[in-house]
Length: 218
Ligand SMILES: O=C(O)CCC(=O)C(=O)O
Ligand SMILES: [Fe+2]
Image (tube, rainbow, N blue to C red; front, side):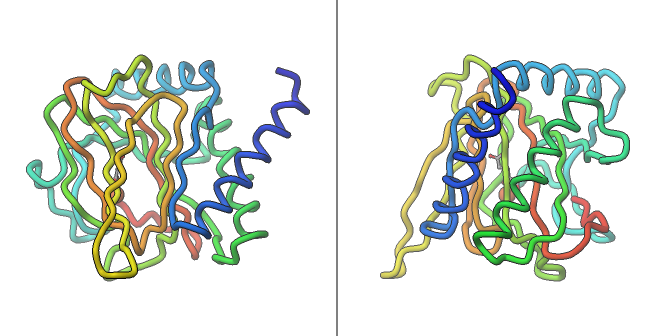
């Protein structure tokens, strides 16, 4: 695809994301990453895995991290932007563009982001939670970009959002973690969970912050 065409396509996607975030508090965008980019990121992920770069994710922030595999069974590797491999850098550049776009249109005062590679082994989940820590609520928006090629509904692994309704009830939205798809939502408002899958489930997970990133670490 020629560069100008790609730029125009991306701009349309950024617009959809910003519109849906302000209207509904969440957005699901397919083909946010091109298939080649997904493959490149999967290679980087496999490389980090081989190097033993992943560790068990915890719950809580910074100094008070608790590992509880019943609540959260994933393995993560934080991205250090200054050391990012080229495919990761391409991804981060795209997120920087998106951050600027959202700031121009949504007035969330976003200043930075943090992302990690994520692996959920078969049989693991992340129980219902929200992404803002009580002790530091600088996470404004949550983003998950899925890297799972040939993922079928019977593989499970949905992200389930619980959307608060005006009458106090909740509407459930289930999202399959298919390759290239981006899910994003208000980090402070939308409870969500990761359902069990029969395959390894790969993604990039991150947050846009309203302060500079001092690594809030999970
Ligand atoms: O992988 C997903 O679909 C959601 C992950 C998540 O909720 C989290 O890491 O906080
Ligand atoms: Fe979450």
